[in-house]
Amino acid sequence: MRKSVVALSVLAAAAAVPAQAEYHYGFANVYADYLKWTNGDDKFGGVENTRDEHVTIGAEAGAGFDWGQVYGFYEYEKLDQASDSRSQAAKFTAHYKIVDEVTLYGQVYDLKDNKFTNEQNRVLGFGYLGLNGEGWSFNPFIGVHDLSIDNTGEKYNAEGNLESYTNASGFNGYMAGWTAIYNFEIAGQPMMVTNWHEIEFDRNDDYAALQYGKIGHNGGVSLWYDITESVYTGLTYRYFYNKLSVDGYGDAVIFRIGMHL
Image 1 (cartoon, rainbow, N blue to C red):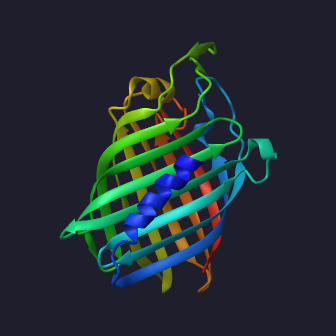
Image 2 (spheres, rainbow, N blue to C red):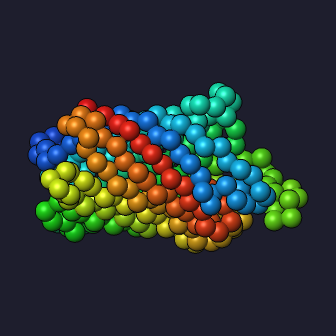
């Protein structure tokens, strides 16, 4: 937990550097999700293992300034399951402009899982905030990927037998990706499409063995609709490849109801 707090504090402190920052926009939401696996329930950990559909509650917030932008969320997952099966996830990202729209980019993702493992991913690199227009934006990044992960030293192979592997913590190659937003209306109703995508490449050998490849993909495409000024709903297609301990492609659907704060 200390690693999580320190890493998040460093990014938050860096984001707070400008004393006279000009505020451009901000948002905050609380929400509840229902996740239903589709392909993702196959080959989990190398064997057939049906993942439980589950309920998550969470909160997110983001803000944009003349110097860059920040975003973060916290989620308490599997609320409908026993406490020893639940997990918590938190993420913080920051773009800090260094030359025009080129940014210093930082990201921390932290997962605490009572049933499986604890994992923290840290990325430090560069991004770009210059690709945007009226109602849309596309923000790419690339950076060095560092990893801390707890594991038992064993996993199931394709034959269903346990095999050992060493700890995958440390340098884990690189990560590239983007976030994208597009706002539009249908019959005067406000809608929004968002996409986030992460590509892990040149993973270390142990993590590659754990996640079935040197390259992995992780992302989601969402459609959002404001029911009222305060209440919104959304549908997310969640996809991944050689990620979440799935060999090959997996996906899920997430239904959300939330409130703007």
